[in-house]
Image (cartoon, rainbow, N blue to C red):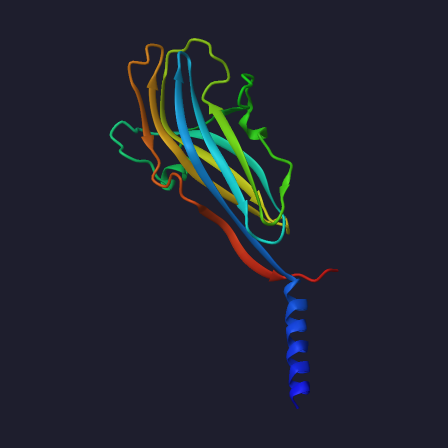
Length: 204
């Protein structure tokens, strides 16, 4: 009797263990840290450290990381929020240029993409650098608004997830730069979950 019970329990455990290998878990989170703004004589730079955590058991991909400036009045603001990055048809959005750290040649932010996947249980980090203008020519204008980071992720089934997060609010007047101000984002340095779902996945 005891031997039969042990055999049944062992069989159940084996079946559970066998079934678990077909449970796919997509879980991705990211963290933004070290957000800084640098004012140069004829340009303004925005730097952020991005960490992506794949705590699931299937690969995911960071497809792209771009940024833009949503123009709005920020002079009296104490903080910017996620809502500031939700644009409307009447919003004026200025694409920012992305440049590799240590490389002064900007590339258009729309093609600042990542080709590598992130395996389950792995982490990637990247220091992203964006700037408002593609060159450092003298200019006479005001840069004012909220800088928004746009991230695109894809899970193992190629479903895409789109994230928008504010990095900072900014106002700077060229050419004399008599006004320079940055406004912090409300959720800076907080781990944010992108996707957390499970599914049954047969090996064929």
